[in-house]
Length: 345
Image 1 (cartoon, one colour):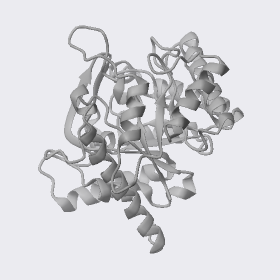
Image 2: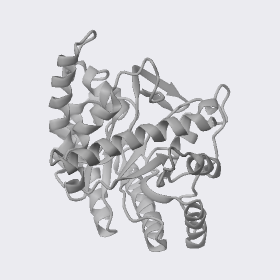
Image 3: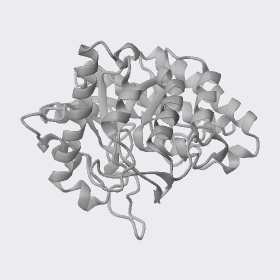
């Protein structure tokens, strides 16, 4: 049965010390909120982690990593997927940049693999992937020479995938409209095919982000739906997209989207996550998840993760938020389990 995880990065992404931003929520607090959630005696099984300050020092020594692993384990949680610090201003830099920038990107993957291995040795982590993207915000620079820039990203990803494989890890490229070369379902597919290392690099599907893939937000030429679509049109478009990307999908985020984009701090124009019961939510979460989770086990997916990026701190601090999310996660998992038992998945 699939494990249920909560993402830790909503305590960081879009937060900060600049004027107008809410302060980050510590990793300890995010762990406590996750561990406290309960629905009919069921709890979250684990967390997915962001490997950068202030949650995690990417250069922490082995003792510090073991101490962190102990803290997570003592809270009754496991560790699943990890987000590599691949962006400019962290450890890494643009995957489509010059040689020096691309080398920094690869250094960030090495950092993430080292921490992953320490977690694995500890025993707190037994499944999950390492998440990456192109580390190039926006698509304007990419569009100046889309073919060459995609080729550069693919070359960087190939080297990153080799590093991951050497450490016994797999990389999952996040599909999101803000990442150059990965900003539409078609461009994402082209990039995955250009890398062509499915055993080492796959796709991370997020329900909120991939909804905006359908609408062609940053790539109108690849839109599969227009405003005012019918349920039948949605089903056909969703099946078209998932049939193409599902074979590559090795990590999955349960989420909700209200059809809008949102930006805060350095993270601009991302799909706007919202609570699962938001009245403006566009997705039937359980139904849409089924498309992505067909044959999920054959692709090595052992857990589901909730992603609620850029929720206000008041929402993140509300225990009811996590109980509602956990309830939705259980529904997704149970629907998938039932399909397996019925021989339909």
